[in-house]
Image 1 (cartoon, rainbow, N blue to C red):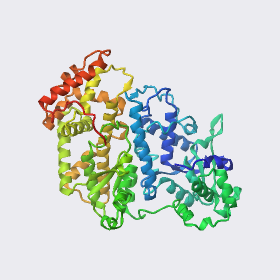
Image 2: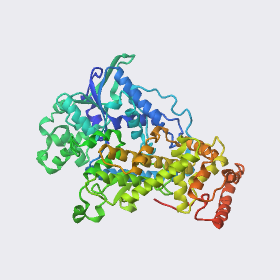
Image 3: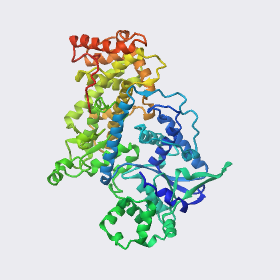
Image 4: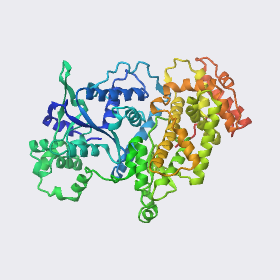
Length: 609
């Protein structure tokens, strides 16, 4: 987030002093996004909107940055990550989600054929280390979609690192506020890129330093240690003569309230004779800066939050805080009943084709198992959860209501999921392939029920229609990749919710315990198939008879993929003319046979989330 113009206004009051020998606390999300943005700034010219650093590369860059920091005798006391965003941020969060949703919608119209292929050498020249966060460049943050799982992927890598894992904390609140409290109580320097922290009370000796202000003591040698520009709220207040009129906080309050430039807000705060400091509006502003205790320090759930993804931690904390919905409904307008007082989850924004059904739709049944298990530690049960995937102004920012199954339905769902995984494992030569196979299975299962052609079947046709050196990733491929990732994240959600239930000492039914054990083998996020690998995985899956295994499990007609592919052998020059005609013929042919169960029926485009 940050306060526009604040850093530039007070930068002159910072003092460069040694960072080597100092103790620091790190704003984890800020560091990850800074390194991710810096990577994207160095993309080759003309790169497509899918040209991102891979999760493994990004994790390596973050860990290398931390390792070099440590090598310069900088003591890292803690790395904080958000684990719950307060209700006061609800409206802002919805507005951001709406903006992202609208951007994803326009992306398809502006790039109708897909995204240019990412060169293999796109990020081969990146040089890791501390100075990486100092690099500047132009980043169109409002144009390029970000990879959806960068925070949980890096968190996962950090937690598996022997040095950094013990220092990572996912907290029941906002990371920046916990960083500030740590510095206020224990001293040191807070490393961030968020100018909001400039108005946090960091105690008598605490200060803020931005990632881009960390530099070697000597430009010619890093061996002499590192230094950084440190900003102290108390020193800034003294030098600006603001101590007795509310300090820098007062200036920021006036700036935000009046939408002024910093210089004008500074002058207004100096000259005003109003009793602003005692006004309710100012007190509310100050309250937002304070640490709010949502979960008591003695609550056992704090022992498991750091093993969760932030979005999953958030729904766990919200489940614990949820009040009696019966009491709430008596006083709340039904139009506002989908706010923070209703059990909700903000799912990661996937890069998908907004003209099709949401990629989260296919794996809803898996997430329903997770939501049902949330009830095990909730004070008040609820029959629904609101999923925020993407938003549209016409939906009044309401999210999508998902029914939470009761215990019996949930156990039946577990049994069906386990049975499917067992059948897939027996039908495939490698157990490592079962999770990708399950994502393909869900594609077939949902598409069959909706009388649509599975995206996987469409892509198998693309594999032979397009040359290996095709210059673009099609929207079908992009959408299917997102669908696979949504399926894997849904399984991950179920696994982590079950981790919490077990950690809190709740008993699990036998089948649920079996599912929990099975989910322990889920791949890490950096091993999930990216758009670059999906064609190869589908080809391998086809070669080992994966499609025949799935159609056999579902009891639907099986068509050999070789037969399917033989329909698309026309040359590149004729392809544009032939595609529409062959598609029409295929539709007529398959509809006559079995429109409701044939997995290779022509994919309907008429859908909207």
